[in-house]
Image (cartoon, rainbow, N blue to C red; front, side, top):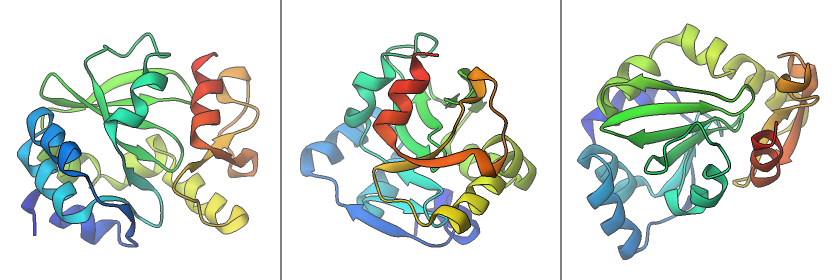
Amino acid sequence: MNFTFNYFRHKFPGKRQFGILTPEELTYTREHFPEDLFLFLEEEGYCSYGNGFFHFVNPADYREILSEWPKVPGEYQVFCRTGMGDLILWGEEQVHILHVHTGYFSTISESMFDFFKFSLGDTQYVDNVLYKKQFDQARQMLGELDQDECYSFVPALAMGGDESAENLHKMKIWDSLSLLSQL
């Protein structure tokens, strides 16, 4: 088992696999991401953890939509997203996050290990900044997410909505990201 992800698997159980990486996707991952992420994806495939809170995704699927967010450097790549639609990226040997509901883009961690062990090990950060509390409430109210879905605030936070779970709706991830990128 990959050391970087041991704690993550324990802290966010509830794995659901969506597919395996093709040989080309594995080669791309090996060439563009840290080895620990490559080994994890080679073993786990495209999947979600935490009952759909974290989704490991194909970076190629997010290139076009990511280009709609001017704050994100073009060479950064999505490798994971939350069930709330926030995008987790790798670039310049660091982990970054695009909070799609607010448009805020920032560096989270200096390494993949630190991100999965310490950033995601910080319950207050996960609950309050990544909206895990609202995710858990929405999951109870609206049901499980499919692979191509997320929960999104309606009205959008950028349009004056608030962070209450009662304002969450289940949406297709691409619709949510496209709409939020325009705000």
